[in-house]
Length: 312
Image 1 (spheres, one colour):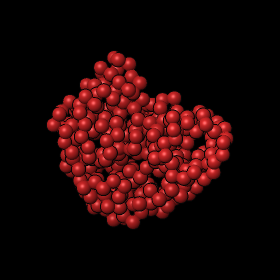
Image 2 (cartoon, rainbow, N blue to C red):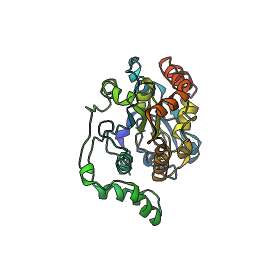
Image 3 (cartoon, helix red, strand yellow):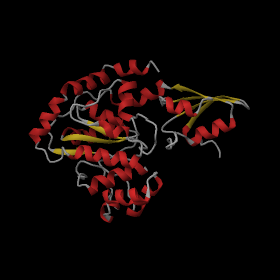
Image 4 (cartoon, rainbow, N blue to C red):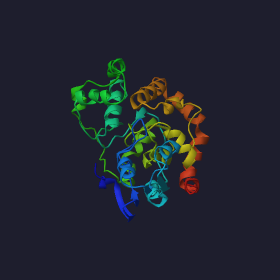
């Protein structure tokens, strides 16, 4: 195995036994044993490794790789999180729609998310995007690779789309990858018209939390959101970044489920009870969380989240 240089931005120092480097993005994620391919290579080759990254690694990763020293690269991270700081006026909230969800790249987790949304009747092409195509066989075959029993695979296949027309179609709103300052204006009415934003986080099949800026689309438009992400993602956001959950109305027990397919199905089950409610009901629920919504809005624009991150 060779070092995957795609996720390595700089090597600061290197010897036969030591390396100091900076990695970025999701670094290809972590499997159910909390192993990472790049980390396996580094620890096999070097006795001591200093790794600087956008991750705040939890104790499970530190215990798996005791010869590695992890340094949180806050300067790189806040460049991503700060891309929406100039967006401070949003349209009025109207709640004409139940759910919006925006899916850019065709990672396995986004194939699964869009497929289950379509299967359950939640994918409205006026409010949900899918900037890629895939075959139905490709989606269902992913279940075979996600640590499920044969019986579980047989069961969970029922929850995912088998519509060739949907799979072969692209639904887009002028998505420009990484250009969040532009994308927010393409999406603002879809966000403020919707009761809930189901955020599609990067590489949700990974087993270690990694926070990107995607949830902030709802924070800056004062909306409700839940995230299909990695296990403990919502707890991680609250613990390290200081943003609060909307736990007066949402049950976050799905967040503790480690298997990505089981977690996704539990998440869809959790939000399904809100689907058939009236617009007035959605407004009432929204106002139950209004204090938290305003807290998160202020927490971002005041920069208080940066003080939370500065401790790590």
